[in-house]
Image 1 (cartoon, rainbow, N blue to C red):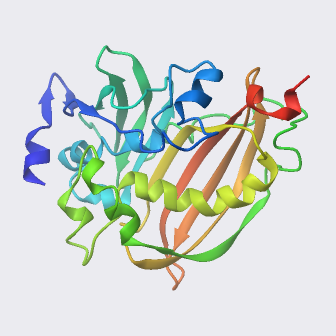
Image 2 (tube, helix red, strand yellow):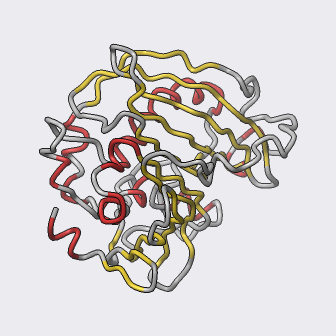
Length: 288
């Protein structure tokens, strides 16, 4: 932990993380946006690094800015702007907090903006970057890929175990491997941001995926919220949620949902807001 924090610098009002190479671990998933051949056909430079992986750049900066409180009552809310490919150097930034919430962003080594938003800890009167968006500003249109899905649809809660072996399998390639991911002040290993995202994504994705068919999807925006955190590994939680918006752009159909993880005694431990996009050009429903 100490080494990770020592690599974080503070100057001119900005907390800056070290340059890291985020790994595209899903390159071999044929038919996904992370696969070089599939992504290239859709106009990308190659298989993309999942936005959730870029979130793992932030924890040393968040601990430097907010202390361990971020893992208990903190948010990280990022809208992704440009995709990166395997091991392209990137780094995370925070403005030095002047209150509970501050700006957060990720850049590629050449300065290209990868994603931007907000981070906070404790009580903030300001909406997060993603909560401040007006999700109703676009009409849902007549979606083909997402036909049958609507804002207000419930993602029924189910019990899911958060298995430590899933995170442990990634420790060697994490850009920022904190000691707390194996042993922590909270009595056990805790989830990294990417582990949190995938835990809160997997169950909703199974529900949503029944409609999205063969279209190629990608993460458009992600917000993680530790409400009574952190999420502890090898624990069982009740995971559920709700679709909050459906819409389309010229090239994509998209969906926003909220999901959450509650302890078995009913406490809200963590929550997530996510935008998923599906490429129209990848769907046989747009073959015409």
